[in-house]
Length: 386
Image (cartoon, rainbow, N blue to C red; front, side):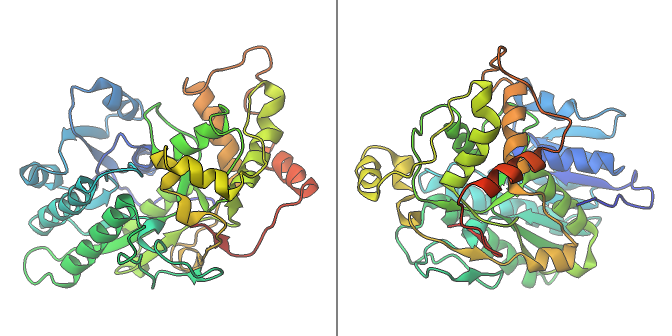
């Protein structure tokens, strides 16, 4: 999708990006700076140069400032929000395997930002980053197409704390938005991306990086029969910036996801085609029997967290993103390949200097689509994950 930059001077509009050192937030910062906005990013500590440096590296002309703000400290947010026109609330605790404290942090952090915006008369709109985990977790209806009308089933005890945190934080945001009576009544749009992949801008760890990295190290010698919906991080960042000024998106939650869905074996096949000849020990595309995955789940909490997703296909409808935000999505194959090359260049993965060719100037997607056509992979017209 070719992103249309703002046609007017945006240099007087300050956009607050929370958790600016994060994987997605860094791309949001870069997109905003490219579009001419002034950006204020929050970090928990300005003294943490490891987190702050990648953000500062994006600033070429002095339109970026960093401030300290902790999600759990309500007093940090009035000052962070002051003078801002828009807020992209991207920050959220992300570990998939986490205790219940992640729920309080996510909900309290979201409410701290919203209350500060309500007290700041200049804020026009907040774009909140939620997740598909707030939409489709906790169901066992194979073939169901999930839309923005659906909410994760919190009554299902198998729903992990991460999904609970995203669901409850988003519900709290909508409840606050619809019940604002006084103060600055800002607009709200919520974006619900699926698994975000694509190039990294720093070596900081993320949930999706951890998952995809396992394919490249033989820590996952074979793959579970599990399906994911993927979306390019650059598309998610563009969606945030578009939604920020889109009146049509006011009051809407919007699924952000590419098509088609990918089984783990499909991801392995794409990465094998591009990287095995360069010396990388990519996971084989054979699927692990369910009984073995079940056995491993007793010893590995990450494996345990995916048990209810095995052998199960769920579909998402992304028409709202296309209709309201005019999104066209990058093919997931390209996002995956670009992600691995960026991980190599950032030092997250070892560069095999003898065979490493680097990212080609040719269209990667032609290569992987050509390979895809030669293998037997189920593909469908709706995006699927669980």
